[in-house]
Image 1 (cartoon, rainbow, N blue to C red):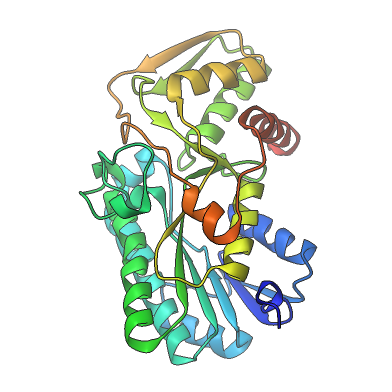
Image 2: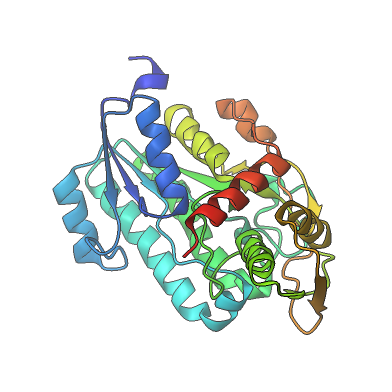
Length: 315
């Protein structure tokens, strides 16, 4: 069978399939003709518990697992929950990969995080730099827990020949994102603040930090495309970055969201709050070379779609 189609008729389980990226990956798999896709997520399966993981494998008998399930949030959430972020993410990855190996599944795709990179990684982040320092402190427990899946994937490939791959996405955004102010990331948090201020006539919004930090943002539908391509085409131990390949300061991001939402009030910068990692942008050369992925959505277009979605779907 052609390598590009080898999983099309096989059983694929997406952990965290009810989540933000998961919903888009399910749509992308269905659009590309994958016929047997199922979800492993709360409340049916608590993937921090080994009996639930074993029951999931017994119930669904997957040929491949795309592991997206994660406990995740923004800087404030990370500062309040470092222990549970480390434990929950580490234990899910450890047990899912091991039980997949025990059951001899054909492939395990582990989704990592840009938070795994060292705090002062040279920009753009290259996969070779992932071990050259400690992650940014506010998200280190989460980032290191996810990075343990890379260690495990490489170890299980070396010792057992188990086909596990590790993909590193940059910050995602798009329709269906998490807009809960207690745990949302920067783009949905800013969109909510601006749209809500426009609706209520509020004349001021408060934004954390100095605005000097830079970030790369990756439209969720492009991310789903990258994951499906990696499932089909990539079978090596080296980690692979997936992203859009551009960098924008938080200050410029705020200005763009203010413009696109029509907010005309004042932006106040809360300098008592942290900026997080100083700079973030990925080198995405390997993804292009290994499985022909290049992001296709412009940032302005992606933001417009996200703002439109929030306006239509907010409660």
